[in-house]
Length: 123
Image (cartoon, rainbow, N blue to C red; front, top):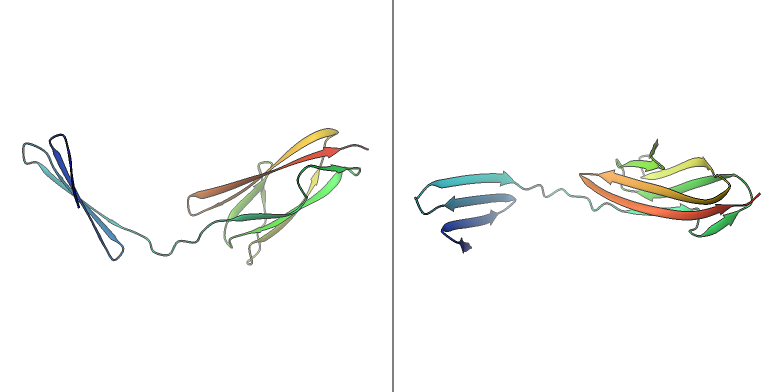
């Protein structure tokens, strides 16, 4: 594939997990770049089992639990959470009076998924 951008010619070649890029300017200066493309990519996901979104709680302490890809880093409101070998996590969280927004993040292989739960606590 060749694409001409002004006076710059760029060629890109994909061969079995290898990306090769070559460019030449109008003065015939050439640059070649090679990058091996990883084919072992796991699609990241984040499923929240508990708590349900937009729920009113009458007790201060709740459990935030869910599942993601094994090996992912998970945080709940910025606090790291243990993720088991199956990608499952569970952590206790105390709610403040009134509205609470719980931010749950799963991060793996330079990809990130964020889920929010909007909850209310009314004793």
